[in-house]
Length: 344
Figure 1 (cartoon, helix red, strand yellow):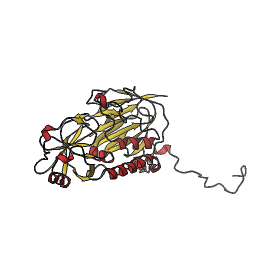
Figure 2: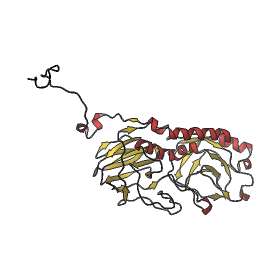
Figure 3: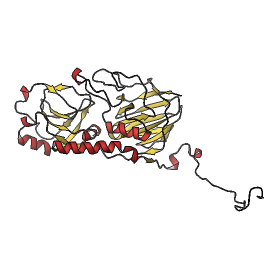
Figure 4: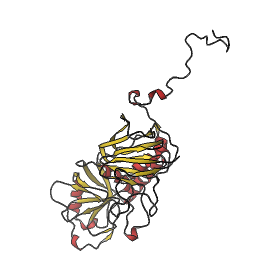
């Protein structure tokens, strides 16, 4: 039977997210959806379901949840503290969530955005073809204590684990030239590529601001740029010379000069970079970017083949006695060679 996932307590930035909405750019609406789309696919692989299923996105902190029907959950993305009725849960894994059990997801340990997936996905009504909240556009809203989310009756295996690629600690971000790259002098572009940036605390689903040492970056004729279409991953240089990497809820058009565009495969790394972590940019060709994206999509399709049984410490298994730990046991006094009826 279907059930309900109750939000008992909620962190400040919880929202329901799926892969977002397509086909609305002409009407001024960006795709939105999960900031870390790869985490969405990882949760789907752990639960054996479509990546179109909606999950709960948690920025920096989770919350307390309780289901009124047995289900299975998966935890992906930024690693957060998590317990089930007090017993610790392993991240990047699927776990049984019995009816009435308290799931508590605390603060982030590494990364920024964590995801709580439920077998079958959160089954709210579709709005413009998606279930995700587009907070900038006013579609949906952040989740708060007292919210009740419908969940379907869906089969999924618990006790599954996935080792993700590291994307939670910053590092090198690959980009291609953008529409206004040539407006920046060769010296400015070279300085941009050799600068060690730090992820500014001012970041959200619209964009990530980057801090840097020294003076800002300026484009020649930057004040005369005509507003034109924006794509997710564009690196805008604002009036104070600071770069912003535009994310899934950015505006659809803009007039700030763009020095480059982050390739889609590296956007999760930008999204998950914790405040203060270092990021630097590497310029690659369009052909190289297409090859990287092709490999990345193939790796996403192959995620189910990377799922393995979760090996846990018996000390952390709350229902240890419910497992069949030994099979084929016989009596210490019985003759194993005697036929039935001849046993003493």
